Amino acid sequence: MTISLDPARIERNRSLRSLTTLRAGGPAERFFAATTLDDLAEAALLAQSLDWRTTVLGSGSNVLPSDQGVPWFVVLNQASRIDVRRDGEVVAECGCLFQELFLKTAQAGLGGLEFAVGIPGTLGGALVSNAGAYRSNVSEFLTALEIVHQGERMWVDPEFMEFSYRDSILRRDDPPAVALLRVRLLMPVRDRKSIFDEAREYQRQRISKQPPQASAGSFFKNVTDRRFAESLAELPEKLKEAGVVPAGFLIERAGLPGLRVGGAAVARKHANFIVNTGRATATDIRQLAGLVKRRVAQTFEVDLEEEVLYLGDWSGYAGI
Ligand SMILES: Cc1cc2nc3c(=O)[nH]c(=O)nc-3n(C[C@H](O)[C@H](O)[C@H](O)COP(=O)(O)OP(=O)(O)OC[C@H]3O[C@@H](n4cnc5c(N)ncnc54)[C@H](O)[C@@H]3O)c2cc1C
Image 1 (cartoon, rainbow, N blue to C red):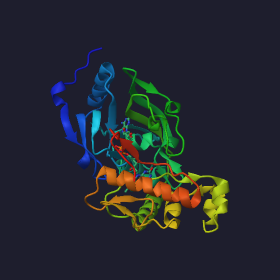
Image 2 (cartoon, helix red, strand yellow):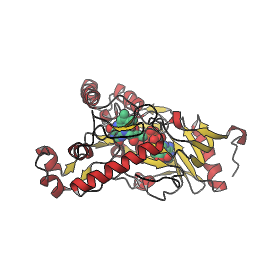
Image 3 (cartoon, rainbow, N blue to C red):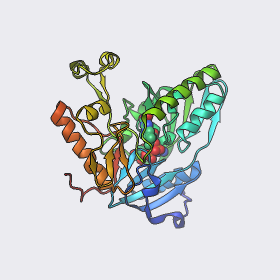
């Protein structure tokens, strides 16, 4: 196998702060911006051949890099081509913006991704967390993925990803080394007007709920537990029936909106958002998240799990 990536294109100690929506965190020890699919594949093949630990970064809207940095290889994925066929088949590179994918498919009269409006990440990031909203998920439409894994570029079935609610194999504690290159999707043909009407309604709901400051969206996953949901008198009936307790409901009822650590705050507009009010360090944000988890556990005896992924060297981290 010949790998043609020019090592001179690999930067050292590149700050990741501006590449995350939380606007926090330290540098990557090695960094490469992949602008084409072949760039991304070459970088992943090189890293796997040298046994370099690697993180592929999309829009950085679901990660918090440590202030001490990421002592390994970070590849920024900017390969973003989308090909849409009117019969519903779509081939999309994983660096495309999820919202762009919605727009292109909706314009071609393909429905299903209305919920993507307002999710700021790339398709790759959306796949890793099986992103979704309003009870739909990106994985529903997937028919195949092209990846780099175990030193090879190959196509695999969606089952490879072991998708579940906001989860996939790539979110596990010790995930396999995989770069997602591009995917094939099969999407239902639908009336264009109804697609855009639905998307507009989702967008309206989002704007009314989301705080404007820097954030990574919902910081914690909702809790799925029917008994617990039914035990909460003030939870709306619809959620009790679904057995879902929004993390924001618990954080709000624990009285935490407005709680701060340094420059990080629990948003008043949406309690499941931790926002960077301007000068928050990654440590401030993680410490605040830890405090929220503790207070929610004390109040409701339930453990919240982060939706946001901590990235890099957190060995010097101490909670409060
Ligand atoms: C305002 C706001 C609103 C949001 N609303 C929602 C919402 O409604 N629903 C929802 O699910 N999420 C939401 N999010 C969270 C986030 O936008 C999504 O999880 C998004 O899909 C992450 O994509 P990304 O490109 O930013 O991923 P990143 O944060 O860059 O990466 C996330 C993870 O995916 C991995 N990754 C990314 N690309 C690849 C690839 N090509 N190959 C292998 N691994 C890869 C990274 O290594 C990392 O582990 C919101 C965030 C914000 C800031």
